[in-house]
Amino acid sequence: MRTNFFTQLEERVAASGSLLCVGLDPRRLSPAAARDWCLGIIAATADHVAAFKPNSAFFEAMGPEGMEVLVEVVAAVPEEIPVVLDAKRGDISSSAAAYATAAFDRIGAGAVTVSPYLGSDSIEPFLDHDGSGLFILCRTSNPGGAEIQNEESALGEPLYVAVARTISNWPEDRVGLVVGATEPDAMARVREIVPEHWILAPGVGAQGGSLDETFAAGLRRDGSGVLLPVSRSIAEAADPTAAVVELNESIAAARARPRSVAPAEAGLAEALFDAGCVRFGDFELKSGVRSPIYLDLRILAGHPRLLRRVAGRYLPLLGNVARIAGVPLAGLPIATVVSLLSGVPLVYARPEAKDHGTRSAVEGPFAPGDRAVAVDDVATSGISVLDAVERLRQADMEVDAAVVLIDRDGGAGAALAEAGVELRSVLSLTGVVESLRESGRITKAEADRVAEFLSA
Image 1: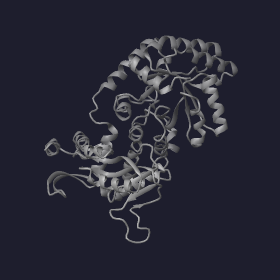
Image 2: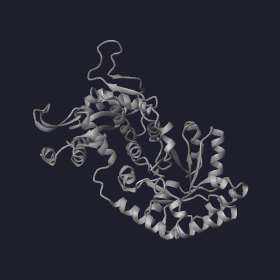
Image 3: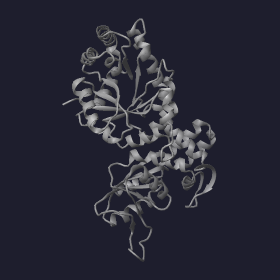
Image 4: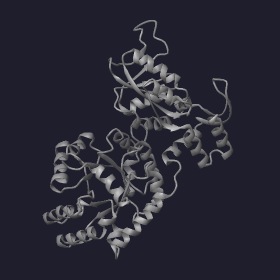
């Protein structure tokens, strides 16, 4: 059985300390010269890199001999180093199955780049090969990529965002995304949607992508998750080994720069602040307590693009469920959009059972035993979520998790855990305040007042 590609990649990154993927692009060479050149690059750089990425096009252009060279080159890569075949395949399922057999069984690659634009049935045949990995084109590094990938989809967001949302429901141990290092804003948006998936980020070097911007936007919370393919600056170097060592030093330095708040988290916190959903001052809460911060997430309903963005952040946290259960009232707009984006049907528990008609306590289609996740806007004490969960359970639904946008750090997690419900939050209130302080949206004094309030 083939070793899982992304497991191998994680292990290789940990062992080598590198996020560098060396591209093997034998341009304008004879088959014999291409073989010698590729084998030379592999020998010179293998000790210092995370992966290799041969570009199938340059080998195919040489004819049958070139394809034989490609197989030989892939076989020459040390077995502990993963290989990504850059082929950008995309066709109907029967053709995709043949492409997959060629990439994995004939050529011997561990992963392949594929296009998503024929839909999931053009991608699934690649996953039929045990352990295989895919990098799906999302927002490519070429200038013309914006012509289609930035076009607005039916959901009112760029097409590359729609691709990322679809892939967010696919397992991160089988699928990654291609997002150009030349597009840091898109990188941050995609990372917001897929917090754990690997990103293949071409464009550093000759195309002008910035390491600092790429890592600020794309690294996972663990400081990994971005694979950097580099070809020309290594291929054209007088000493490829020295070039790779120097690149690794630059990568390590950029990777180590402090990022106290994840960029996707910071960007969302700023958007919520700018929309008036997070306010600072002196507010009386429902409990009568005076607070220096106020969350008004019902405003999201008046900001459809931000509401859609917020709902997208819920998707990776849902788990395998049959129903989205909105918590009335503030959670319902978010839950509705989460249902639309995920395709999971929506239900909600009424505050009181209807006294007429069906006399339902839970609205929406469901069957006893359906597993649901509760969706709300914010968690403080957890009481509103617990009330909804209890009514859902009384209707014979299974509920063991709740997802909120902001955890106010008020003890909701512990209260829900006692009832057998895991609290998952997109943001914490502490993280939101720190993000806004770092971005200059609020002063240190304002942040300190909130910290003091929360600690009390």
